Image (cartoon, rainbow, N blue to C red; front, side, top):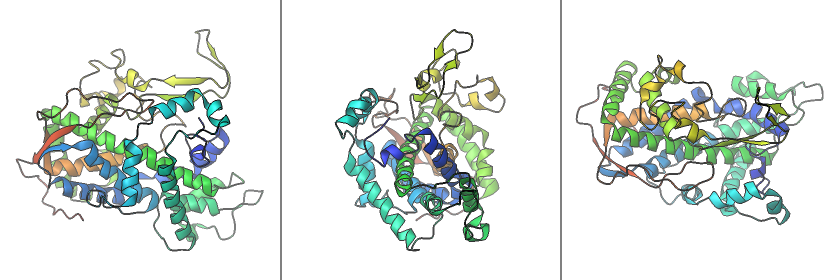
Length: 421
């Protein structure tokens, strides 16, 4: 799909196969969840601090959109926002505009009539918003070129790849050493030695835009839908809170990705929320060569577009028993092996699977940990059952919804002092 804009057309999700390989090789190390865990945890603590001041009905999509915005802004651009309190910040304003606009008709037009869109140079997307992010990233690039910014964020890693140059034998420049750039950056550069060109500035801008557009909405929607499900199922919430309390009691305030990975019920809750409300209702892929579908007698020609209906697969009773029910135990260590391969695809699969999966899941789980430590969510007369969804093209967008919130009736087991700014 082409959007008619050089930045959008160079996003990893829209780039040609050859450039996609280069971009993904460079971008992969930048999504290290362990490297970004301290940043994400700080965002989660700040969000929990604001959550403790809330009482009554809470519009959870809007509230947790602020958390998603904070995480992505800090991880991608190194910008520390105050989205919960600073509503006048231009970045915050433009980001919220980006996700409030209905993109269904423009995307359908681009998908069905790409030739006409390009021929007449029709601009279907809100390029004022895109231009804002381009200007922001461009300013950040100029500051880093001058040596005025030292953070090790996504943009920094992409810029280092942009600056890298190799000779035709693939040998790195003399100045590119592990001592100069650090182990993670050196790994990026070593990977790039197999290519004879690094990222252009347009490609750097494009990957920052796609990380923001893809990451912020996925993170905030998943947290909001998980909170909604927990409010409707207090028994599941109580069970999860017990695991949360034990975690803080054993490990204190700083929860590492390794500890998170061992929280079995938290994993089940988030995985089941993803099954019921996947960020993308469908994904599309194109064949790179003719492909025969087993013994069906059907051959997919090269260049054929294949649609995978994720939402429908997740709700199919042939794949999941009682598919419309919230059952986190489906994903327990004992039961996970019973799920048929490729029937559960919240982030896709294979080489084209979502690059930010681990980062997004870490952000969601940390945010839920700090939230559930302090408050309880419950159903009120204003809570919509079932949720209402907008008609869309590929992405799952629910109408605004609220749940009740109150401070915990019992004190958490953790005795650590909360300290968020």
